[in-house]
Length: 248
Ligand SMILES: [Zn+2]
Image 1 (cartoon, protein in one colour):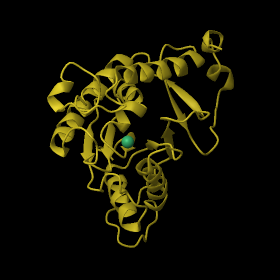
Image 2 (tube, protein in one colour):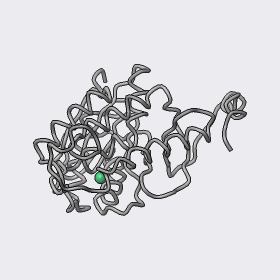
Image 3 (cartoon, helix red, strand yellow):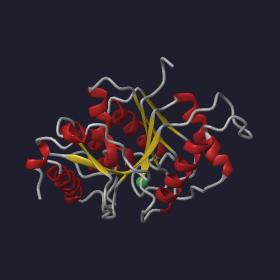
């Protein structure tokens, strides 16, 4: 389909996609792929910012991530539940956008919204392909695979994407969430501080991407888990010169 999406990223909150896989979205857009970013909530339970501010920030970040489509669903922040109704909301997005690949946050997380988002996306990606799914509109569609991007926990990735060409722009996308992170305009959004508003937070994001990059011989990388095994057609080409540059 002409308007279909190649890579659709889901996040629980505005800023999850930016932190987890913005570099991959930007790199794919640079390569001519059509990408999309969809959040399940509007982030209204956050300490800083209002839903309106966070919507504007997400729109600005979406532009920075060069996504063709960005959208926020209406599930309640901090209260996402793994219900059939919520699965159908994600099925509707998947059937409309017809993504080849779907990405979501890894299911092992401290935040319950992230756990439920991960499980909802996994389930929706599967049942969206069922022809006679109860309560669903549109034609069935099943993405080829679900990728899980990593956040807080140290988990072994299935593969790492070289995002060196996209990393600076990724940071700009993250910084569009002015109400959430450290930056020159942070005082506009009140004096209350969180872990995210500490200047070290963005340093740690950089360090993580730098470390994943080092492991594949690149400057910056983003790590993903897939549950299924990965097929390689040309193992000689796949394990090229970059292996000698990888640290350690
Ligand atoms: Zn989140």
